[in-house]
Length: 401
Ligand SMILES: [Zn+2]
Image (cartoon, rainbow, N blue to C red; front, top):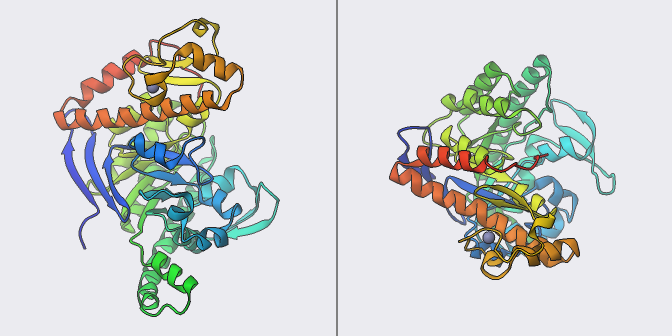
């Protein structure tokens, strides 16, 4: 079988890597930023606009899609790609993170998680096998193993037991995938109805399965978790349980503790991160993929990203400002509109205002990754990272919740 991940260049002065990940719906050049489409939509932005912004891949939240509209609806439309009209790669999380953060938890056992969803309170149960089944039905290109994401702070003993359970769950996810890959091949040859045919098309997809390293803020647990997850041999490895409220140094240390134990020839995904400087620091520590709600979430409260830090466009200083959000930015908002006008839209609560800032912010993140890829190829990433981080900190950054 051909390798899914190709390493194209490595930085000499840091652990930054330039790679290429092939999926059933196309290639992802890494380092890559993944816009978050929580409920099957990157908030306020259409798939056509995402393509124009050169987004390579989007993320869908399994938990949200499972709760609403539900799997039957998505299956009826032939899977998530068709339902949302995005033909590029899609990564889905396992649902674990949202179950632990949003749903009313009933019980976590070795078998799985019982919860009541946050929409109508209906009870549901997700096991490692069910998480795989749901993501198979969604038809995502990159599937995440079910893990337990512990909160911060977390007691050592709980973190240790939880990381070990995450390993056992990862093993079950891997096992389910292996068994159902075999079964789906035989099903595919004899579809008996339209639904069967759709199901067999979905199940024969070449889905990549990523394992998730846990271990909270404890170095030895991160190391042990990385070793155990790698032992199971996944298509890629994620660092989970970071950016859950811990100080930035602890976040960096969690990644540094796990990274040396991840194989160099597989993609690494730091989940749920982060600010632009954090992304560069993570890339310098050997991470390849990132997803984060910040560009879209902050846009909705009037905050725009710029090379010199964030701008709060609600501020009075922008009332008469004829400049674009950022000079020389090629995004649709900066090409056509002034800070003063966008400020007015935000103050007047016009939808266009948050849409324009969202487009700018996504462009900022995606363009930053594009620049990073070039810098790694040129061997100048480390200087670029230092200069960027120093300039970014010249302005007071917003508090990131
Ligand atoms: Zn812009």
